[in-house]
Amino acid sequence: MGEMYNANCSCGLDMTFSIGEGLNAHNRNFINKLLKKQDVETFNEAYESGFVKLFKVENVPYLCEDCKRFGTTFRFTYELHSGETIQLVGKCSMCNKPVRILTKDTMLCPRCGQKINMEEVGHWD
Ligand SMILES: [Zn+2]
Ligand SMILES: [Zn+2]
Image 1 (spheres, rainbow, N blue to C red):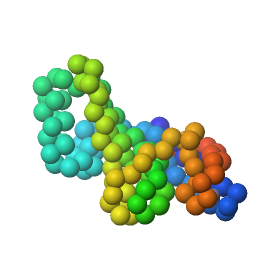
Image 2: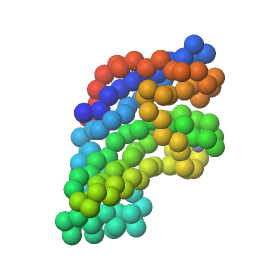
Image 3: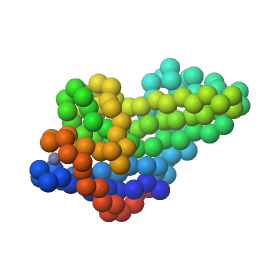
Image 4: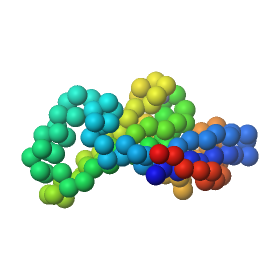
């Protein structure tokens, strides 16, 4: 289950977003829709060969350095039995550029740069 957070800042920023793992976190079909074809093939090959120890899809908050927007995207992580971990992260939903992932403890306001107040307001599947 993922968490819903309300993020607010003294400058007036106020937004709610969903992060964490939903019902599709461990669904292989869901991954097909998120990733590029080549990445799906690489993963499926490893999976079908029995190399994949675990995998998950999460929603993560980001700040886009390019268009300075704040949003959420997916992060797909899979770990191989060899110990190697591969992470694939979605692009900015506005400008399609690579994004910087934030953690909820270090989230700074995209408008004024201050630390944001984070309040858990619910859950999502
Ligand atoms: Zn952007
Ligand atoms: Zn602010």
